[in-house]
Length: 233
Image (tube, rainbow, N blue to C red; front, side, top):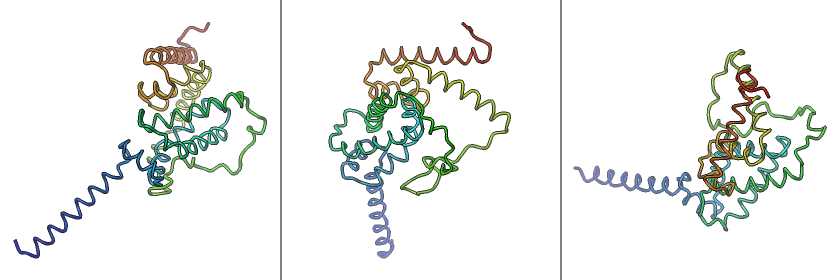
């Protein structure tokens, strides 16, 4: 091989190795890397958390408080608590479950304060409401782009059926006892694993399983009653 060619090849190898190390050091899907970056107040790491979990946190907070606006306030308090408490994170759980546990504690307290009552002003039309939920877009990396492209627009009939089914399920979930509502929201709405739910809520695997079974049974019965296929007592 010509010396000049060998030199270029070696230089390329060094660049590739450096790039591989850079990617590895910024692989925030690795909890150890993410926690270290958060402790260093890395904006990219925090942006990764926001992009990945903000929408889920708002949805979960909505199970405790009476409005979207209050849920977003709860999430803002959660992110502030994450920033202030990251130095105390010991890695005994994943970063995800640690953040969700903080949210649950704040949302529970706020829910009690709000007493799940909806003020009259909450029924007013908000002319400043954005046409598309801002949480669906990235805030840091590739800011302004979709986190996930929207699904194809359904035909009107299909859309009406889906809306009806979701409304029935959500109403059934809202009517569940608190512990059952928490578990089914985390497992079936937000897609958390059983282990993650146990860590977030501080419950045993056995309790989580029983709560989830009871919650699913009640929601299923509510759907059956709605469509005339279940016990109407």
